[in-house]
Every structure is written in C-alpha cells, then in structure tokens.
Image 1 (cartoon, chains in turn green, blue, orange, brown):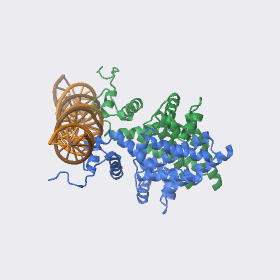
Image 2: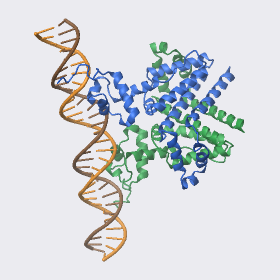
Image 3: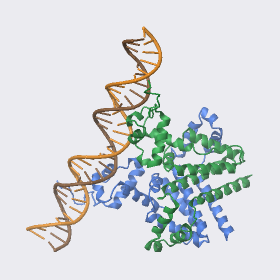
Image 4: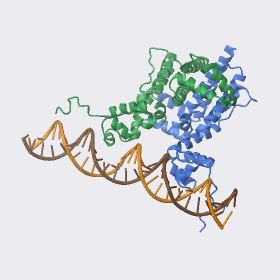
Length: 222
Length: 222
DNA sequence: ACCCCTAGCTTACTTAGTAAGCCGACGAGG
DNA sequence: CCTCGTCGGCTTACTAAGTAAGCTAGGGGT
C-alpha cells in the first residue's frame, strides 16, 4: 500500500485537478494547444482517463470559464458602488490579461452559477446605491461590455511587452504605411513611441469615464 | 457526357467566391460548421480544390474578418465626429449581430489593411474635431471596446428572438433560482419580462453615455 | 500541332475527440 | 483469507478535419 500514499507523483486525480491543469496548459501554450491528449500528459495519464472526471472537452472549457470568473472580485458592501464596480472591472481585466484564453471560453458559455452569482451581486450593489432597475441594467451592460471588449482586444494584440509594442508600431509605420495611414502614423510617433507610454493606463481612463457617466445618470434620475 | 457543361453552374471559382461562401456557411450553420470539406461542397468542389485559392483555413478566417470589417461604416467628413462615431458603432454592432462569428474571427487577426484603414479614418475624424492625439487614442479604445464587448456578449446570448429571451428569463427565474439570485429575479420580473422590452436599446444608451463623456473630455481639454 | 499552365481531383497522412471495452488494485463481506 | 464488485486508468479503434503530394484534363498561347 505504500504504492499509493507514499507521495507517489500520482495522487488520485479529480475534476478540479484536471481543470487546473487545463488552465495551466492553456496559460503556457495557448488555448489551441489544449487537447485532451496533451492535458493527459500534463497529468501523467492517458487522454481517455480524463473522461472519468469530465464528460467531454466542452465541459473542460466550461470549467475554465468558471475558473476565470472566480478570479473576478465580487462587490462587497463595505465600499461604495463606484469603488465596487472599479474593483470588479480592474480585477476582471487583470484576470483576462493573465489568461488570454479567458475571453474565448467566457463567450462560449451560457451563464453558469458563477456568472449568475457575479451578476446578481453587481446588480445588488447598484440597487443599494440608488440605481433604478433599468439604470442598473444599463450600467452592468455598459461596464461588462467595456471590460470584456477591452480584454478581447488586449488578448488579440500580437505582443506581450511594451518593448514589443514599440517595435511593432515602428515596423507598421515603416515606409509607405505612414503615407497610407497618416493619422495612425501620427499617433504612433507622438504617443506610442514616447518612452513611458503605458498601454494599461488606457483601461483606467475609459473606466473612469464610464463610471462618471453612470454617476451622472443616477443623480439625474434621482 | 460533358463533365464540364458549357456554362454549367460552375463559374471558375476564386478567392472572393470562396470567402463569400464561407461567410454564408458560417451565417447559416455556425462557425464550427465551417470546414474545408463543407465549404467545398457548398461550392460544388472538393475540399482540396479550395487550396488553389487560399493558402489554408487560417487565411479563410482572416478573409472573413476583413469581410465583416468591410461592413463597418467608415467616418465621412460631411457629418460631425459624434455622428460619425455613432454611425460606425451602430453599423459595427449590426454587422456583428448579423454575423455572430464576427467577433471570433476579428479577435484572432492581427490588424490587416482593412482594420488599419478603418482605424486611421476614425482617428482622423476625431483629430479634425479637435481631439488631441492622446484623447483620440482614449476615444477609439473606449468606443471599440464597448462595441466589441457588446457584440461579443450579444453573440453569446443563447437566444435569437425577444420571445426566446423572455422564455429563457422565465426559466432561469423558476423555483429556487429566484431566491438564490434575488436581484436578477427582480430585474427579470420588472424589466425583461415587461412587454415591449427591447434589448437592442441597451446598446444605444451606453453608446450615448460614452459619446457624452468623450465630448465633455474634449471640451474640458480645449 | 504542340505544349504547358491551371483548376480541380485523388490519395493518404496526421492530429484530435471520443466510444467501447479491458484490467488491476483495493476495500467490504463471507 | 479469499472473493468480488467498483473504480480509476489503459488500450484500441473509429471518425472528422486540415492539408501535403502528386495526377489530369482541357484550353490558350506559340
């Protein structure tokens, strides 16, 4: 019996470990590299063994969606709505940046429990802050769209570091492109190539603008 | 028998027809159903014949991305920036609603010419309207994120008609779910189930809020 | 008349998801 | 202590999809 507990590299395996391994694999090699066979390897197991713990690959992807969702900060009551929304948005964007596959798996899932809980909590926070039902609906639609869209675009950017960004920008601006896209070229030269340009700051700017707008709308309706 | 009947239904086939057939197929049966073999069938041709016109499936998907992008209204100079941005946003959202696979193919492409042209034109419109380079960057980042995120969420909704929405909402609110998600239940009851609820109106609300915010930001900077 | 170019075809290999069934170890009951 | 059912993991094998390689027929240019 020492075979089992003696810290063999092989603990029993379960749905949760499968999902976490899937997330790791997707983080490391991209979502396309997440195949049942590779996932098996990752866990020292044959592909078909995974099916004892998940029904099929779709269930793996659904599980990943709930994993990412779990990394979003839920609103808490001890802070105002604005701070609660900000935290949720920032944490969501961070989670989706950590896991570039996040946007993909989220967009293929019909709402699971984690999503519903998240949503309910957001609406609750807004309602308590004096938002009407209708305005609360507008608010979360707007916020979620922004965060989500931002994350998608960020995930599809073909670079990971600021250095790569300037390099790429430079190569796009090369030669005739600058003539074909004068405004892009201007922006590239005056903004993106400037040392200290922080792409992440973009997110905060839009977020505050949206929050300002929502606050104004709530006050106008009051 | 003349395998190749003169003026048979078989015109020569080219990259463009391949792409349009791909779009049709994806519209009809979903992006997952878009396989090289099915696409071949669609055109009365073997799968491998397609490779005379496209290098590989990725190129088909890239082509689809440019197709959708082509359905976005470019800003024109004869209207103000606000109208130009609104038109672009509305047309983009409409295109992405017409082609639910649009968000998927757009997010996997590094910027092609259509994208760059589109972007350049947007920035130009904003610059002419008095936006600084920096603010123009914020503006299109915000607008695109919103439109894009909205479209993604819309595409992932598990229903197509308002009737299906109310039905689904009702089923979610059924039984204990209402207790688990009180705020969602409230919103479902007071808003979504109301006759005449128009989900599309959501989009316009957020869009105007964003445009208001941008206008204010520009005026403040002036 | 010849020849070659091109669009489309045939074959076949590879990777992936997964259905079906096998097997060894472990714990409970006789 | 032996046995047997169960459960986790394995083996095999089938199917769908992308695509590499090479074939061929028919039409146009020389």
